[in-house]
Amino acid sequence: METKYQVDIKSINNTLNFFSNCSDQKAKELVELLNYSQSVINNELELLDKLQLIEDLSELETDKNAFLVIILDYLIASIEAYQACEQTTPNQVLAKLMKQANVKQKELSHIVPQSIISELVNGKRQLTLRHIQCFAEFFNVPVSYFLKNE
Figure 1 (cartoon, rainbow, N blue to C red):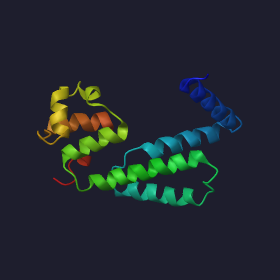
Figure 2: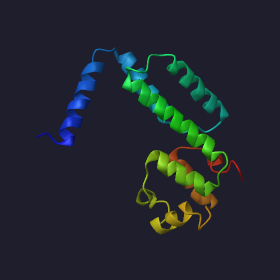
Figure 3: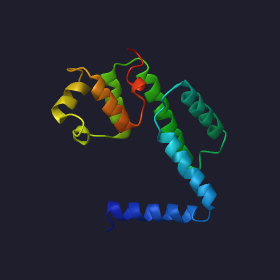
Protein backbone atom coordinates (compact mmCIF):
# COMPACT_ATOMS: atom_id res chain seq x y z
CA MET A 1 0.00 0.00 0.00
CA GLU A 2 1.37 3.38 -1.02
CA THR A 3 1.67 6.19 1.48
CA LYS A 4 0.30 9.67 0.76
CA TYR A 5 3.89 10.84 0.31
CA GLN A 6 4.53 8.22 -2.40
CA VAL A 7 1.31 9.14 -4.17
CA ASP A 8 2.26 12.82 -4.01
CA ILE A 9 5.72 12.10 -5.44
CA LYS A 10 4.18 10.14 -8.33
CA SER A 11 1.73 12.96 -8.97
CA ILE A 12 4.51 15.56 -8.97
CA ASN A 13 6.58 13.36 -11.29
CA ASN A 14 3.64 13.04 -13.71
CA THR A 15 3.18 16.79 -13.67
CA LEU A 16 6.87 17.41 -14.30
CA ASN A 17 6.82 14.92 -17.17
CA PHE A 18 3.87 16.79 -18.67
CA PHE A 19 5.74 20.10 -18.50
CA SER A 20 9.07 18.62 -19.62
CA ASN A 21 8.02 19.04 -23.25
CA CYS A 22 7.60 22.80 -22.99
CA SER A 23 10.42 25.20 -23.82
CA ASP A 24 12.64 26.77 -21.18
CA GLN A 25 10.99 30.11 -21.91
CA LYS A 26 7.48 28.72 -21.37
CA ALA A 27 8.60 27.02 -18.15
CA LYS A 28 10.03 30.33 -16.88
CA GLU A 29 6.81 32.12 -17.81
CA LEU A 30 4.73 29.54 -15.92
CA VAL A 31 6.93 29.89 -12.83
CA GLU A 32 6.74 33.69 -13.04
CA LEU A 33 2.95 33.48 -13.37
CA LEU A 34 2.73 31.21 -10.33
CA ASN A 35 5.01 33.48 -8.28
CA TYR A 36 3.14 36.60 -9.37
CA SER A 37 -0.22 35.07 -8.52
CA GLN A 38 0.95 34.49 -4.95
CA SER A 39 2.59 37.88 -4.40
CA VAL A 40 1.08 40.40 -2.03
CA ILE A 41 -0.72 43.37 -3.59
CA ASN A 42 0.79 46.62 -2.34
CA ASN A 43 -1.19 49.29 -4.20
CA GLU A 44 -4.11 50.01 -6.52
CA LEU A 45 -1.97 49.65 -9.65
CA GLU A 46 -0.99 46.10 -8.68
CA LEU A 47 -4.64 45.40 -7.84
CA LEU A 48 -5.72 46.50 -11.31
CA ASP A 49 -2.90 44.45 -12.83
CA LYS A 50 -4.08 41.28 -11.08
CA LEU A 51 -7.72 41.96 -11.95
CA GLN A 52 -6.71 42.25 -15.61
CA LEU A 53 -4.75 39.01 -15.37
CA ILE A 54 -7.80 37.23 -13.92
CA GLU A 55 -9.89 38.53 -16.79
CA ASP A 56 -7.32 37.39 -19.35
CA LEU A 57 -6.93 33.95 -17.78
CA SER A 58 -10.66 33.44 -17.40
CA GLU A 59 -10.96 33.55 -21.18
CA LEU A 60 -8.87 30.38 -21.39
CA GLU A 61 -10.41 26.94 -21.04
CA THR A 62 -10.01 26.25 -17.32
CA ASP A 63 -12.32 23.27 -16.88
CA LYS A 64 -9.57 20.86 -17.98
CA ASN A 65 -6.60 22.79 -16.65
CA ALA A 66 -6.05 22.40 -12.91
CA PHE A 67 -2.93 24.58 -13.09
CA LEU A 68 -4.91 27.57 -14.35
CA VAL A 69 -7.58 27.02 -11.72
CA ILE A 70 -4.91 27.11 -9.00
CA ILE A 71 -3.42 30.31 -10.44
CA LEU A 72 -6.88 31.90 -10.49
CA ASP A 73 -7.46 30.81 -6.88
CA TYR A 74 -4.17 32.39 -5.78
CA LEU A 75 -4.99 35.60 -7.65
CA ILE A 76 -8.44 35.81 -6.08
CA ALA A 77 -7.01 35.14 -2.61
CA SER A 78 -4.41 37.91 -2.99
CA ILE A 79 -7.08 40.35 -4.18
CA GLU A 80 -9.38 39.44 -1.29
CA ALA A 81 -6.49 39.86 1.16
CA TYR A 82 -5.68 43.29 -0.26
CA GLN A 83 -9.28 44.43 -0.13
CA ALA A 84 -9.69 43.10 3.41
CA CYS A 85 -6.56 44.98 4.50
CA GLU A 86 -7.96 48.26 3.21
CA GLN A 87 -10.18 48.60 6.31
CA THR A 88 -7.95 47.03 8.94
CA THR A 89 -5.63 47.96 11.76
CA PRO A 90 -1.90 47.26 11.50
CA ASN A 91 -2.44 44.32 13.90
CA GLN A 92 -5.06 42.83 11.58
CA VAL A 93 -2.76 43.36 8.60
CA LEU A 94 -0.06 41.37 10.42
CA ALA A 95 -2.51 38.55 11.15
CA LYS A 96 -3.68 38.45 7.53
CA LEU A 97 -0.14 38.45 6.16
CA MET A 98 0.75 35.59 8.49
CA LYS A 99 -2.29 33.63 7.34
CA GLN A 100 -1.72 34.38 3.66
CA ALA A 101 1.95 33.33 3.85
CA ASN A 102 1.17 30.42 6.20
CA VAL A 103 3.67 31.78 8.74
CA LYS A 104 3.48 30.60 12.34
CA GLN A 105 4.13 32.90 15.31
CA LYS A 106 7.31 31.05 16.24
CA GLU A 107 8.71 31.81 12.77
CA LEU A 108 8.57 35.51 13.66
CA SER A 109 10.16 35.14 17.10
CA HIS A 110 13.43 36.56 15.76
CA ILE A 111 11.59 39.90 15.47
CA VAL A 112 9.78 39.89 18.82
CA PRO A 113 9.11 37.10 21.36
CA GLN A 114 6.30 34.72 20.42
CA SER A 115 4.19 35.84 23.39
CA ILE A 116 4.25 39.42 22.10
CA ILE A 117 3.36 38.26 18.58
CA SER A 118 0.34 36.53 20.08
CA GLU A 119 -0.69 39.76 21.81
CA LEU A 120 -0.16 41.73 18.58
CA VAL A 121 -2.23 39.33 16.49
CA ASN A 122 -5.01 39.32 19.08
CA GLY A 123 -5.04 43.13 19.33
CA LYS A 124 -3.97 43.18 22.99
CA ARG A 125 -0.86 45.18 22.15
CA GLN A 126 -0.27 47.75 19.44
CA LEU A 127 2.44 47.41 16.82
CA THR A 128 5.29 49.89 17.19
CA LEU A 129 6.95 51.49 14.20
CA ARG A 130 9.94 49.19 14.75
CA HIS A 131 7.63 46.15 14.68
CA ILE A 132 5.99 47.38 11.50
CA GLN A 133 9.35 47.97 9.81
CA CYS A 134 10.59 44.49 10.73
CA PHE A 135 7.38 42.71 9.72
CA ALA A 136 7.21 44.70 6.48
CA GLU A 137 10.74 43.59 5.65
CA PHE A 138 9.95 39.96 6.57
CA PHE A 139 6.80 39.85 4.41
CA ASN A 140 8.39 41.95 1.66
CA VAL A 141 5.72 44.65 1.73
CA PRO A 142 6.14 48.42 2.18
CA VAL A 143 5.64 49.89 5.65
CA SER A 144 2.68 51.80 4.21
CA TYR A 145 0.90 48.48 3.74
CA PHE A 146 0.43 48.39 7.53
CA LEU A 147 -0.48 52.07 7.80
CA LYS A 148 -3.18 52.51 5.14
CA ASN A 149 -5.87 53.44 7.65
CA GLU A 150 -3.71 55.28 10.14
